[in-house]
Image (cartoon, rainbow, N blue to C red):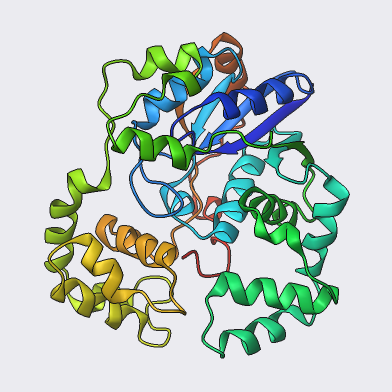
Length: 339
């Protein structure tokens, strides 16, 4: 039996997601989605609750089982997100293939770039470039292009970048990759959130099942909870920020603590903490790590939270192997900064 895993946020679930799941459905017997919960990868809150987004995917008839990605993974960098989500799917013991969209749509092309990450020169090139003060994403691209000996336009596209991280995370995995071309010109979840935030209507971009799931539910935005988050952060001691992943690196934790104390809104906090080296996404993730009190090196979970399932998904859930609780069930998370 072919069981495809899909890693997603569905923030919100839209027609592009439905097209991907339709393509996956044509290649697999069952589809399991590992989805971010109420907090998402770029640092922030999801516009709809995790249960509504999962329901939209299952009610569309295209997903059989939706499980929640652990929160420390959903708030990770692209690399940490890919590694953590892939390991989460591996631990289920059922997934045979990982399916994902990409602008390229060419597995060999994407795999070639992923192989550059294993080059022994990569770490040295990355460190050297970071010393020039550029951001991590820019330094990473420069390091990879130095190894390739040519420009890598693939790295200019967000879904390609995540696809390459998935392929790297699948190295030595028994799970096989499947990639599908993202339709050019398709609306992005980012654009839909902008429309929602402006009070607009996104129904033309949303499958009917998702419309029913979201109907009558007001979307949530960071501005709705920003005062609560900032108040919480201001009450935390300096040590809380230095214990964040990378918090002791070049004064990052101290910089974030000082920005919190000097700011009257999350937007001014982000502006105060951001530098060429520390991207806005990294700052945002660190803020939510601090707010939620996520430990710097959380254990790998011994459980999977079910968000939605159809009849086939419930049957599949029962096939997930259970482990007896014990110290050996805790595995260290990826040895890397998850921010």
